[in-house]
Image (cartoon, rainbow, N blue to C red; front, top):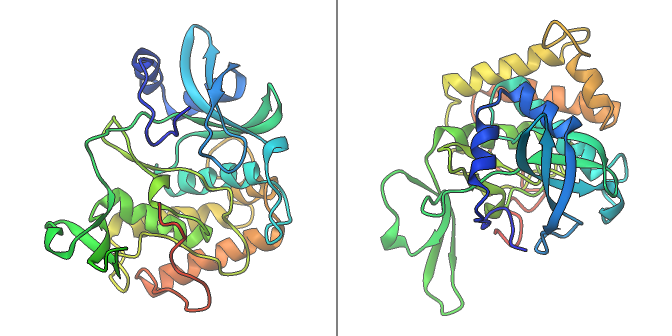
Amino acid sequence: MTSPEKHDDDGSNDVDAVAELTVDQVEDLLRRGRLEVQGRITEASNTTLLCSVTLDAVEGLCVYKPVRGERPLWDFPDGTLAGREVATYLVSKAAGFGVVPATVLREGPFGPGMVQRWIEIDEERELIDIVAPRHVEPGWRTVLRARGADGEPALLVHADDPALRAMAALDVVVNNADRKGGHVLAGADGRVYGVDHGICLHQDTKLRTVLWGWVGESLDDEVTAGLQRLRAALSPGNRAGSRGPALGDELGDHVTRAEVKALRSRVDRLLHAGELPSPSGGWPPIPWPAF
């Protein structure tokens, strides 16, 4: 089974049907739909299954990661990786960034786990790449200068894309410890998505990402507005909508109180600074491998 980044099957009609749904409807499909396992995504480090999901004659594809298939991490002892994926989706949704596919926690064929909408990708659209210096085109940001196995210079670059800017800000506030290039998807719908958020939201600084291309630059208006929405939703007693629990309470189902407090502090610091930060220096800034 291929990974979500490379998958290309003939289920486009299912994908088209899901694309017509609202976000709330997609969440309902994922939460209440009948799951049938289609295969296993073998490249993933934890058990990751491709499933069909069907509800009221609407069928789509999704990724299912059962909690029982997680490998414990010594530095993320609290909660589950599945819960952290759901929490990161809730943060992205509250900010209005829309860069994490709809994600829920539910029972599945192998017990409780994370279920996330499957994203069909545009194979021709590159967002992150490694290129020779002479091949960097306008509209790309350089993250890292290095040398290949043959000694030739090489650059890690990413597109100067507004959705990637929002994703970079999301990584900062959720303290993403593993934003690899392969975790950034160019959707066939023209949008940009980030996946694999199982090691996010730790209270200690662990940020590792390939999206460092805007270091020291002012936050744009869209990202600033999103962070302000997120901060308001995180205020004690504040509800993001007219129904359902407050965001802090929702997050508290998946991460610790200290981690919710740390999230609130990171949002405050980013808004106060008004610019994307530089690497802290106390932690490797880029995950390895980078893809």
